[in-house]
Amino acid sequence: MEYLALNQIPYYEDCNKIVEGLGYSLVSVKVTPMKGRTQVQAVIAFKDPSISEGIGIDDCAKVHRLLAPTMENLLSNQDVYMEVTSPGMERAIKNAAEFALFVKKNVKVYSVEKSDWIEGEIVCSDENQLTLKTASSNENLVIPYTTIAKAKLIYL
Image (cartoon, rainbow, N blue to C red; front, side, top):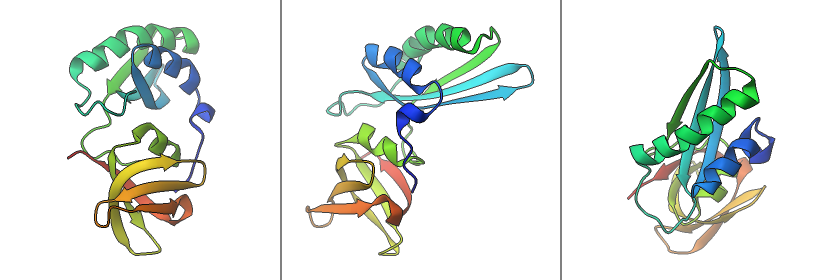
């Protein structure tokens, strides 16, 4: 699995300032030009890992109201279609940098070393590896990103 620092993703830092100011964290932002208009997809999560409830429509609407005009300004385009969503029930983690946003949340990763899924709670992560408290043995397991083929969040 590849690690790309979140601040290297275009528009991430500008959007994250707004999202964090509202009490959320920005998981991802994707900007796609489409036939004269620009599509922006933003995924948000609660900033506080102790909050177990999911992101709702009201949360997405609150972020959308502030983020949409900001993106129109940043993109110098008034024809911006903006979508703000939650990570979903089983979000596929595409960038290893996302693990840090989901500390204390459950995840399953497919390890190429073990040729199997490993489930556990995210303890911490850095630029090279993920530390999970495994569900099976309740011990911390360090997993290098180079050995992760795919990963998904698990909401219990």
